Each structure stands twice: as structure tokens, then as C-alpha cells.
Amino acid sequence: MLTNTDSSPPSSPSITCIKCHKEAIKEKKIERLPDGGTLIKAIHADGRQCSWAEYDTIEDVMENRKKEKNPRIILCPACSKRGRINHYYKDDKKRENVSYLVVHEPIGGEWGRKSKVKRVRRCYINDSAQRDIILKKLGRYIEGN
Ligand SMILES: [Zn+2]
Ligand SMILES: [Zn+2]
Image (tube, rainbow, N blue to C red; front, side):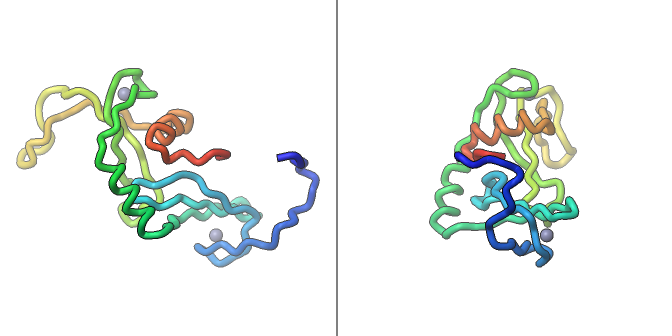
């Protein structure tokens, strides 16, 4: 971009936030989501932020589902050991808010009496720089955020 001055007035027409239907000063794509959507964030003049998931064509969704099946092995940005990228939702109703973790080696024992799921060491990715590494590895990183 050639013109990058903060003093220039916003030339674009006003943006209406689709979440709260109020005027937003900025709307941007944040990252790709595991289900094929794109996380969009709107920033309001009072500092409030709204986020939601936007979906492209059904073909895009299918394409991303296919990719999703491959387990992603990564050199964990948190502990520098190899592990598999996984994701989870803190709030199942807010699917646009995805959290990532790296699953490591078994640590002995099982989780839950009935499920018999082997206990594994897990690194939860809370640091935004580490999260970017995960997103880039998964091809979900959107440049400029
Ligand atoms: Zn809003
Ligand atoms: Zn780790």
C-alpha cells in the first residue's frame, strides 16, 4: 500500500455490523475456522468488538473438511516438542471462538472411568504469537492481522 497515513479520513462508506446492526469503523477477516468459515471482527467507535463466522460457498466448506481429516503434526510452539494440533470450543454456541491445543505423548492412566481415554500431555495455546504459528501451519492464518 502506498498511502498509509493515519490522518487521511475514512473514504469507504460506513460499515454496518451484521451482529449488532450498528455502525462499525472497521471490519476485518481474522482467521479461517476449522469448519471452513472465516472469523470476521467488527470494531466499533466505542471500542466494542463483535465477531462472527462467515461462510463461503459449499465447495469451500467441503474443501476445508477434507483438509481437516489429516492430523497435523507440529513442533509445538509452547514446549518445542512434536505434537498434534487439535482444537476445541470454550463455548459450543460460539463456534467462531476456537481455541487450539497441541496433544503430546501419553502420561499414563486414563481420563474418565467409562471412556478409557488415555491421558496425554497437552499444551493449551493462549499466546497470540504461538496461536499464529498454529494458524499458519493449518493454513488458516490471514495476513495482516
Ligand atoms: Zn457490532
Ligand atoms: Zn507442547
